[in-house]
Length: 303
Image (tube, rainbow, N blue to C red; front, side, top):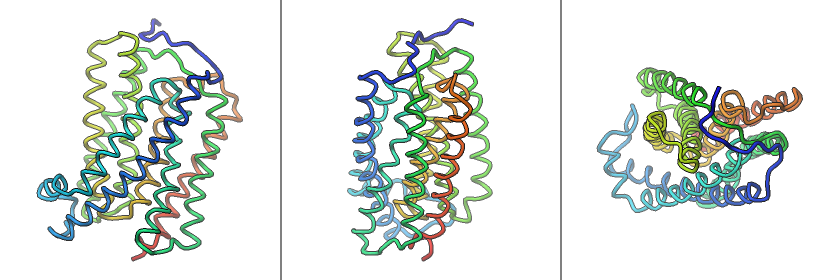
């Protein structure tokens, strides 16, 4: 089978690829700050216009655009996205994508300080469960992750999976949205953003290598659709839950989905020993458990 992208295979990170790690970490800082300001903007708009039982209305969305807090948060998230795109363009997805979990620590501290509400022992334990799980995940990925040539068939596979996911998300939205579940919106947004990161990497690599065709156009459309729907889910998650709970879900579920695609479809961990694969599964389980524990024990969720 012929490939579209001729990328060098490297089991270990090159110095330039390693430089993408601090780039991703700086992006995590902007992600944290952006989430805080967007969350505050959503809460202020709902205080003025009232809360909706089935997700934010068009009126609420228009109100967000006029909120200074929300606009500032959006700009910061834009910077975070740019830094993330730079990092995933030049380094393996499974190495840099999970580093966004650093935003969870920053967001949790900032949220607790600004609200004056301590997290409590169980909530703190949940946060550290997320961090430990992601740290193990990144540690394994740093040793076994590498760039692989991306074939047309692999891109088609990702697009087909995304189409199925979009259908499932839209169907489930009609059934679950009325319950105003923060965890539902967080999981949905995390899954969608995982596809955004994966397709964005493919598109950027095709631009860098001068390989542009109709599949690339479909990938760009997929990025726009998944990012737009994911963004709407995030705003609803801010309405139903806290900013640190939202960040916990996104920084755990997003990279797990993206890395899962990278490993299973894009062969970014091809040749990895079974011990590393088992480590991925265990680390992902630990991180996801932390998200569910935080959703259960967070002070705002209990309220």
